[in-house]
Length: 444
Image 1 (cartoon, rainbow, N blue to C red):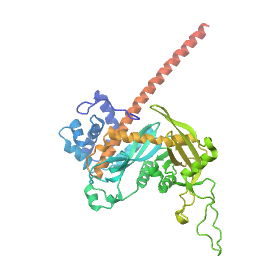
Image 2 (image 1 turned 30 degrees about the vertical axis):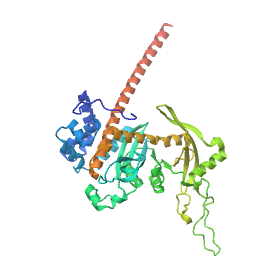
Image 3 (image 1 turned 180 degrees about the vertical axis):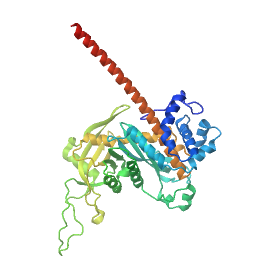
Image 4 (image 1 turned 180 degrees about the horizontal axis):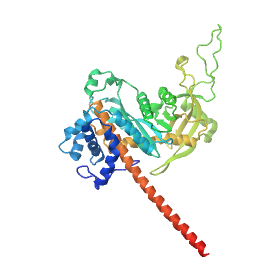
């Protein structure tokens, strides 16, 4: 398990062995979330639902959880998560503060991605045939845009927001059955992600870098949105993304034959696919174009690949003739060449003098969100929710993130206690050595 430790083993009713200390810690940690609910019934059932998510059992849907944590009260637990009209925003604000306290800071990263929930049928909110990352192919699923805050390989999820396909957004009958709020209209995943970034910034979440894969990075509007917010970012792109050499110029339009200026200024060099620019770099610099770099230690040793980087101007400026774009902002184009020969391409707006190893490690920090998605599903039942409504899905998703954050709180408590013990032991050893030296000096 990466980044998360489970709480102690639980008994049949979901109460952990040695439950007194666990219960005190859990209730104290959960208090700000409980206080965010408006009604007493909701304040009562939230801890019960969370204990169901945190406890044992392969299925984390309502009925099997109720059997473990509140036998005979399945309907009440179902009503709490699927039908009770409690707002998610106050709890999301608490989660943002908790996540920032656990892992926020200038060296933290904010990772934007999406995760899929495989579904049968067509009535669960937002379900459609679309690319499903869980299966690696197009399938019937729901897609959730996710934001994860991470530092030092310790992640905490911040947001899970359903992507509503356009066919759903414009289908009044299906919207009504799934109780989709009227204010929800069709938005691209990039637009959803930027809105969630704004929510995190408004809540005071601290991070130094935004990461995203090519599903988001291919969008010029998404990249521009991050830049407009003053954020440093590194995103995946397609090999076909058009770029210009960094020294490209755009002269002022010259007068035409009749004295009228040209309508479209022309760059001094044409734009080319990212792949072609890296190929030209390799041809010019030979073996010096790529450097082998490692970014972290995996289960089988250091993870490494070859990287090359070059400054470019991205072809996402104003449109010229023939659907071509003028040079936009300057950025780093980075190519990762793996041992298999596969290449991956990235853009980042790190400063011009940034070291290649810094670029590589920033780009590869995105992996931890995949662990978050896996653990949310396999350990906390993110994909076990059986309701069909917009509200129920977002209630369940938010509660799984809160449960995840609690596990990270427990993990970091353990790490801090271990470090404190090691520090005290080191001080004791130092004092013994100091006293021994004093005795030796006194008898010399």
